[in-house]
Length: 132
Image (cartoon, rainbow, N blue to C red):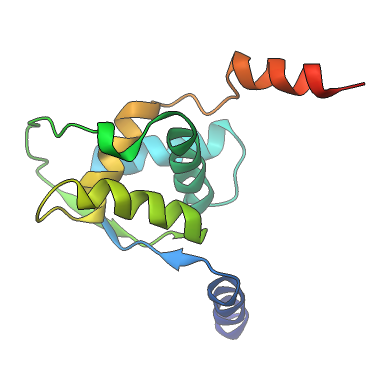
């Protein structure tokens, strides 16, 4: 089993995916787990990727503003493997701020998107108009 998991990871890395080692608050991880169940996704990686993808489609990396938050009492680490272009978006947001890790950057992205990962009406309208 361990070899199979390592083989799958190696294939993902070979196809341009990258690992984001993040320290997230317990509350954020719980929300990710709830979204995983709600949207019937197989892993936290898929939830993280969808959140970043949705944000990158609507929010310019230079428009983020860091807000003061109350510090979490407990953090846990997760290491999602996501597509290279999504990791690049996170890095672009990260460059806007000094000395900030992937965890706080993802939490800013997550705050922009919220817990609704459904398609927006504009996207659905574009899909409908593309049909012959």
